[in-house]
Length: 231
Image (cartoon, rainbow, N blue to C red; front, side):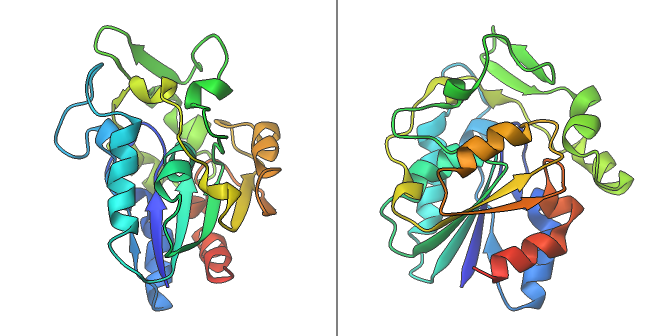
């Protein structure tokens, strides 16, 4: 089995965000990959109004998923659930989706389908440049409050500006409708409220709830490892 991690919005160096869980999986003989998402500028092209969007992220993840016939668990986090909904669709090697505090869209829904009229207070929007990011002064308290200070400090250099286009672009398929899925609700998440997560979780095949913030794979990596191994 292999694991493919799909990270959330406004971050870069995807493998870093998963490294604590990935290292524990390696100890059990399971390798993992964390595809770069073009809309976050991870492929060299700077994000912009006309730059890479959801389709580019989907293509990048799908390329990794289709490169091997090895049975695969996709672990999608937050915005990564939007990408995975389309990228994992009809990929025969994918046998389970683990959705961590993840958006879980129906066909035709986009990230903006789940947001209010006003931007979240922890986001910084650049309408001229066509990008958005997470405010650094809100990063630790909103998304990493249950992580140690080493992780909180390192994360400050792992955020990214991302194309605003991804907010409006709808998914063309919903992999969770035909692939076995588990939703991990993070009950202490200050970025994606637990009640919203539970609404998404109702669409999944199985639900697990954990007293964790937005990044349990950093704050409680052994728990996430065991959950993956159980799949």
